[in-house]
Image 1 (tube, helix red, strand yellow):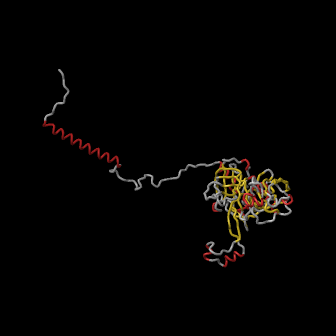
Image 2: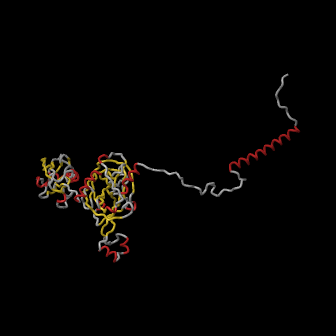
Length: 432
């Protein structure tokens, strides 16, 4: 017998109640599921609300971690070795009576007391820079800074790291290298360890460098910035307010240097001074803004100059006894009718005047001669001539190569005169 698995058809009387019961049960289950989903999605709305209105169970309980981080690096170590020797240098000048609309005092007018103070020569703060104590000897402590920091000063003050101010005296300046030496009484700095100089000839491009000083003045005294040595032997030429040439064979760095940093130290990772910060480029001649190009005077040059300033109050450099102009600055007509050098000679320094009884005069140099070499160094400008000449000392003999019209000449000149003995005049490029 074969069995067929089929569902028998129910009777009509019992089918209605079965369908009604199933529908009722489905409705109840659906309602329960709906309430459960709403409860899960929105939290227990039926539970009591004991929380604060912020919704955070730890509101008002944020704390600072008690973990201590002992940060120590080459930069912090180097800074600690030299920072106490870094000072702010304050340039004091006689107060000038104001007129016109120069500042706020002009708006209200000068009082009789102010006018009296001006007449009595009261000193006012004119500018600020930086410096570094490099030697304490006997009753004197010595500070090196930039010449342009102390230029035109009538008095000087030094602000120490502890906030105290002491009177400083100018020992000597050298405009050509933009360096100056000051001194203060050593009992004012008894607790300060002087900075030491490192060998700038050992610097490598790319090595770390630290600049210390007072950017924007003593309000930010003893600021520290770091960077690298960007380049070496950069020729940086400027002029002082008095028109004297400043010529520095500089260290280039991207450590931040700002007004007020001038005269402060550039330091290596051993905490040694490898340069004295001097200037920076902020904008090109075409008005392109520049960042991260600062310059420092190499420590080896600094030491050479400050030793002379301590001893003599000035740097004694040889002089030829001429005033000059650059050959490249002359017109075509001047070249052909006055100087008359061969057309192949395009660079050199034209003698504009020879002072009597000077080495140039004694060697027979004449007006309109064109100097092209000092020793073995070719010179195209007056600045290059100065730089080459100043490598010699008074008393040395140097060979000069020059053209007199179309004839090339050489002459040996004994450098018997120094720059301080030259007469001043207004010729372009000054005397050498």
